[in-house]
Image (cartoon, rainbow, N blue to C red; front, side, top):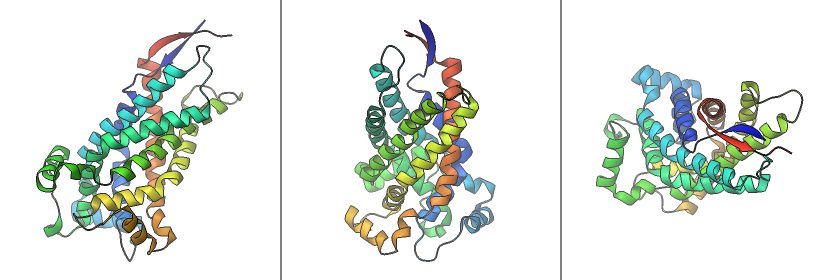
Length: 290
């Protein structure tokens, strides 16, 4: 018999919120690059514009919405994935097959995307406010104020604008991050060079972050544009896809570099925090060892 530490269902949301506090400025720049039309401004130029107009705190516009998003979206997707994985895992400690892990991650991500869509919508709008003319800014004071304003002025259902793309992206993101993280970590720990330690967690999460960025970037661009659009500006998903395609194939990968630069450290920090929560505060599970 052996003992292992198992994550609690809410650890993923806490870990993701902690990571968001560090990576939020990169997320803000990514959103602003994705909403550009016509001439593109580099990430360095965008950073200079934000710092000049808003100061250092301008890079943290929408942080309340970002935290709310992680505490809803990531808590749901990590929670569903972890609980399902622990329920279906064999008693001898052998990991579940990758196809099952990917299916559970996809379902968890889809549900998390739906739950977190309202906070995600407000997050995108607050981050994009910085570059709009003063008379066009929405000026949400915080995430709760943003949710209230959207519900009152645009209707409650507007909070789920772009939900189909959010859920699709979240499913792909969760497969890329969680399933591939577990797969890579499991492979590395079978070699004599890696153990269950921080270096393994960092390596696994970096590779998982690269996979997740590539899988989700086209959907992420479409989601960001749908959420940032004014009522009636976009007629449907097909119209949005065609409008983006007219800018060229690479339009679907706008903001890829800042997306990866943001997602890589966010994924690393999330899993490092998650593993530390598991090791120090997870519950003990006794499993049979052959």
